[in-house]
View 1 (tube, rainbow, N blue to C red):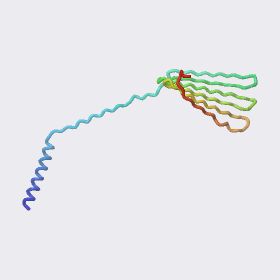
View 2 (cartoon, rainbow, N blue to C red):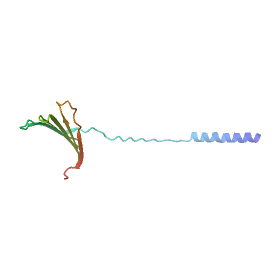
View 3 (cartoon, one colour):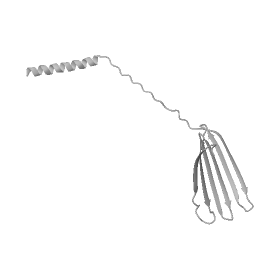
View 4 (cartoon, rainbow, N blue to C red):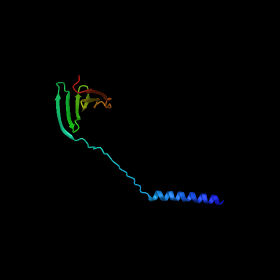
Length: 139
């Protein structure tokens, strides 16, 4: 029994000594944190223009067109044209909206056409939407 006690005391002393040896030594931890935040800024409009035109034909059809264009600071150009044409003999109004967005030489064009029959009580007809993507300058 005495042997076990001495062995236990020796082990305890060794563990305590080891702990004391570790605590008396010098250690240092260096932590370095680098945070990289990308610069995010909203593009601002660098140039813009707008125009409106109206016209009529001898049979009474009337057309009004509104167009706008702007280029932001990233070089993205957006052009929008809205044309309303009324056909009084057919009691119909056709609205065509064409939007072209050009970024890095690639243009995306979306054309939406809607027919409305104002005096017939019918709801507007279904919109016809077509989209195409093309490279500027290509045929």
